[in-house]
Length: 537
Image (spheres, rainbow, N blue to C red):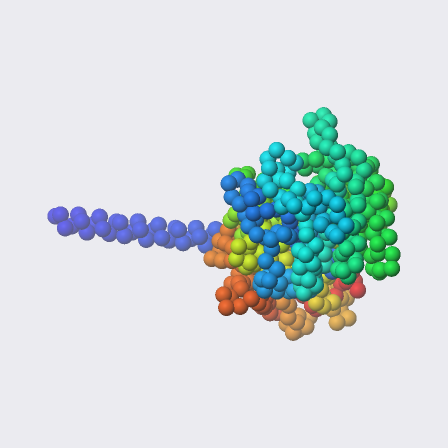
């Protein structure tokens, strides 16, 4: 009797276990599924234009003692301490041919340039001091170090933008609970530095004046009228020093956070070639919802307002200046470990690149090339983080003209389309935030021709089957969005321990008449060389 009961119990357990397995399996099949999606491209005219060296990265001044939330992430990674003999770093920059690099940051407004005719004591090296502005004492740039940096930049082929100290000679005054810098800019040391640079035949693509002193300022503000006067003074210095040199470097300003009234007044009377601003729309690295914001495409899309508003200011004032992002790391206070140095950050970063390009932002400088938790390059190993590869793919694939493109079917996918850089075709960027849905995606066009066929919609299946596109599928290793290893078409991207070479990024080839399969939590670049849009001629 006991054995009979035991057998019945065991049979019942087996039935229940099998049922659970079947239900779980069916649930997974139902949960992980495919849906149809369409990228619709309006190809008659471009909506935005970017520089050939649109991708830019920054090198900052922060010393190793710069710490945030108990973690010190800068190490020896800034202008005064960077290992300029590191071959991986050199090759990482050379891979862009060229990479635009902006030299500057918060402490640029406390720097003295130790030129031969400098009369200001130049012995400090940004010692930590919580009683002074920005929490650090003044710093010094020795000309021997400037020579070393320029030798490195020449080898790398980088285009350099340098941020000058706009607070020199100004007096700090508190008004209404805020700190202002008043009085004229003492440009003597800056002019001496610029002359030294020219006499050494060092190439500088642009001079930027000050860091985050516009509008409400970060730590300290300069009101718009005196700042405009300072910019005019810089313009006169550059015109004089470079009078027999062509092309002359750009005047870049103001390099801070957008505030409508301040920027409108500045642009209306500005002598700047570039109106530069900063973007940290995710918030501080200490916030608990940093990842939630990066993984929310609807939230990220709301950031387009700043780009649109600045373009409106430039247009309504009749200015011929270009708009730049001269610094953006998404998450301020050095970023966040495991987030801004991981695959997940490529959602924020590539979305920002695509969005800003649509509104005519012609350069986008990522904070940082190296340093903090948000660098393209790890500050201790000098190995590339995932966003480095995202930036390099953008640079190689996305041409100067941004096209109007929409994705139908979900708000969990963003898409951006540019005329291709490598052909007369186009490149499509698709970002899929969805955790469960693979989007089987087709691309439709307005204003397209291909081999004298007026519409890609009507081309024959035989023609489509002969054409091939290139696809680059990006994911985190093992599907982990917090992985610091980028996967390209299922293969790891990494610098081998026995090498200093940046890995090759090979596409997979897909027939034109097949849809683009965009897996959950993945990012895809697709180069369609056979699509010829009137906007791209």
